Image (cartoon, rainbow, N blue to C red):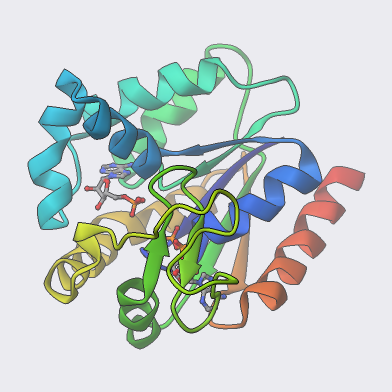
Amino acid sequence: MRIVLLGAPGAGKGTQCKHIVVRYGLLHLSSGDILRQERAAGTELGKKAQSYMDSGALVPDEIIVEMMAGAIKKAPEAGFILDGFPRTVNQADELDKSLASTNKKIDAVLNLKIDDRIVAERMTGRRSCPQCGAVYHIENLKPKVEEICDNDGARLVQRPDDSPEVVANRLKTYHQQTEPVVDYYRNSNNSAVYDIDANKDADEVSVLVFEKLDALVKT
Ligand code: ADP
Ligand code: AMP
């Protein structure tokens, strides 16, 4: 199964992916996580991406498309879930072409729908583990011990691009450049598109997601 997870920054894509990959045995490919790993490793790619990420703009399509094509090649036969990619219509088109060259396609698109007013609160309260990448929230999804990762005991950090100013920019970028990707998939005959109410609690969102994907697996 090959899935694209769409939604505004902070909609809960990473949070849902964690559960989806366990239930369906898929590879989680987050473009944001890959970029952050490249930056931490000080690679050329990481250096190129830096200024775009820090301002809340999108990294240029050609860089992202090549990076994600490389990651997708390593996915197991069971498939993958893309989180944060594609983020422009051009990226979606390039992805389709690249999959079609090996007779593959995106089977399902999950569109996590969230109100803008909830996004800011989710992102400014987000905390991540610098070691294992686990994501928490200071109110909604707390670690067992405040500011400490449940998995490995590392001190949690706040992403620099989760500051209120950058969040506002990222949301604007989402509405201008990424929202049209939903219509791109709605207008294509290849992929089923499911709208999911992502304003709900994380557990309730998972139930909605599993309902759709369980039905798809059965067909
Ligand atoms: P995205 O990957 O879409 O940017 P995340 O999964 O990192 O979003 O979630 C953003 C923040 O909101 C995190 O702090 C996460 O713990 C929290 N969160 C995720 N889903 C929900 C939810 N349904 N309700 C409340 N908080 C949530
Ligand atoms: P995320 O972790 O998904 O919130 O992404 C963090 C940042 O990485 C974004 O604000 C962008 O600057 C960059 N980024 C991630 N995915 C993409 C993509 N598909 N296209 C362009 N830029 C991206």
